[in-house]
Length: 426
Image (cartoon, rainbow, N blue to C red; front, top):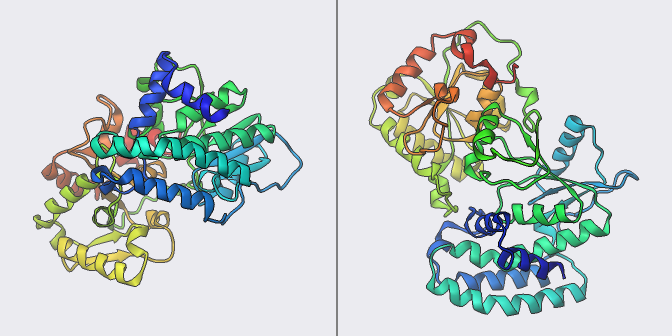
């Protein structure tokens, strides 16, 4: 019944809210399928095979529920199990709320009762032939259309389970997924309070439209975007500290300058090689363009430079060696690598100035109070016009090099000056 009510919300209701929800469902970027799926006429058939394998053959690696107390009512939802217990601790630290359990989207179709699997199989068999024909001839929205049955069934499973456990409040991570607003809208109708927590990235990327009861923002720049994107919002906006960053805050405000310069990688060359689904703003091409300009410049070849490698570039010894050669060809032989077993946040205190193209770690480095510069000559929606955040962003490469040179000689107070509100210091 829930499945068909979701269909009703998507296709038959014509309110402005429903139109926005439908638009997001079929246009929002999804990382679930590779970039090549946009050009794959048979993606409907492949997705059908994947769905049935997941429903009937896959086994649950983690449990959706981790009941550690006798409380009822508050739950956490995320698309994968990675860091989910840490996120539960984060919710408790910021809100004081003890959770009754955790739900993971990737596990929702695994180990379901037999009658549920039969019903969902019949539903899928109704939709997948039509979808396979549609995506064969239609390139626009091909990925979202191919994902449609699976996402809708997962939503119905989650809603049903939340109702069964008596959920009153859900802390909703991974707000960027295509089904996020549909799911939130339906949960609100069931009198479940939805609290959405986007990641520490600008909202324009995946969160320009928002359905929720409460929105948790973690960066000052996000508050500027919220005024632009949600001028008539009917939800509460709250501030939390970003997930997992407080231990890396620059509370010493070091006055000495070590003049160590670090490039923070987004691993765009790997993302392209591995066929990652690229979002519309295409930060991958932005970084590749910056690296191309760097390779033609003499500045970095005559100055010592450190590279903070992305986790994708440390996945194996072979990949690491390829990454080292890749950056040596671009920056020259003076390059050194930060690729210890510690995460990239540990690198913040090691380097006086960090720079790169559009990447979440650069926003997080600014939040932690470390000198940072961002190159962007392609993404028109970032930063907002007249925002003070433009101070950190340069769109001309020659100017970018000059700012790097000048910033190396600035102390903390001189660099942040009136922009201190973009750090953890309020």
